[in-house]
Image (cartoon, rainbow, N blue to C red):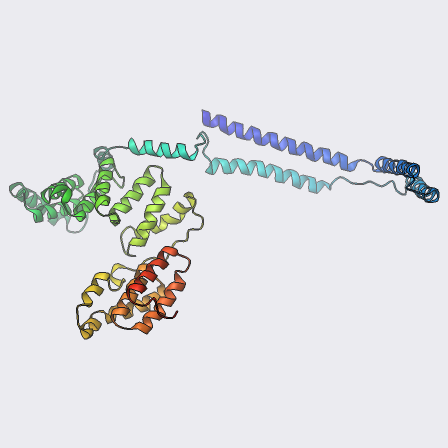
Length: 422
């Protein structure tokens, strides 16, 4: 009901504004149509009085005053005879008036249509602090894992079919029975969690993964085990991050602040609870850390521009898509391992990767980390001239990005390149 009242109020105000503008247009028409004779007479009378005042003050000679009076009198006579009795304005042509009225009507109707299409009738104005408080409340009161799983199962009661399902189902049944007798079999639990998930039995997969985490030391289990558990929990709810899944995110990030799975689902959590600004910050960082073929990259890249707009980051430009994981070139570990080899073995190990990386960066560009890896590799290969050229190019590419430029300069200094002539 309040929504309709607000809509009616909007149109009442719009009509009132239109009425005021139309009245102003009508008055302007009448004033513009008034004859200018009387106003001209008033001006001439004021000029005669001013001549008399100047003559009394002694600022005007008698002869000059008489000459001015004669000129003013001549103009008054001309005005009386009609030579000067012309209008100072005229009403606008009828067509122009109708155009103005049409534009005004279109503005009123257009604003109403725009309000109905993109506005939120009945939704109260909410300052930023109130929106954040509402988001925190929504986050605290969102459904639990079991409820979300039940809703998802009710929406999609039939498991997805795929080639080989008929053969896989009896094998999984056998594996379940075997795990009843071998509860400490880590390999068996790993396979059970993976294959229950493949069959769409997400609750069974989650339970198997939880048992595996407990078997591997609970809180001390590998982060990858927690990441897979998190993935299963969110898939089981149809993409929603429950409070229980959020707890797993926190466990992961306490141990690995750059874990991409946890960052991805953390961003989804904030998007689902009214904090797209936090989603933007988290996914922007995730984009920097990820390879181009990571499974979340399509979603993240599609969302970042709109998240930036909502978050008040109008200057954000979506960076180029990172290269696939297998095309990133030698890692820091690769370079460190190569340092223990002979020059010939070292060159044989990374020469091909370095040349491929050179070609890729030249054609497609890349993140600052990729340029840093290339500098390290060139230094190890003792291709110092080429390394200095790449350093100069990298400094130009990242000149406007202080953090990336600092990384390039630090790696150059470690490689003994920073003293080279730019």
